[in-house]
Image (cartoon, rainbow, N blue to C red; front, side, top):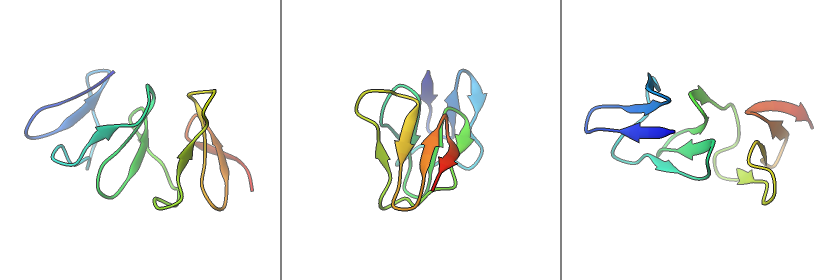
Length: 77
């Protein structure tokens, strides 16, 4: 799972490079965000931050205004 201290954020004990521990929050079991990025586990997603949404039934699915994602990777437009 996700953990943080005052200096860094981790997922499964691996550093999430660039994540801001002051603004970091877990959205669901596998998704999180800080003030600039959305994360799927340790991976920074290339998605539209403002329109990002989680699927209400499957924790590995999400979408934004342009794409659908499965496990943090684009699956369709």
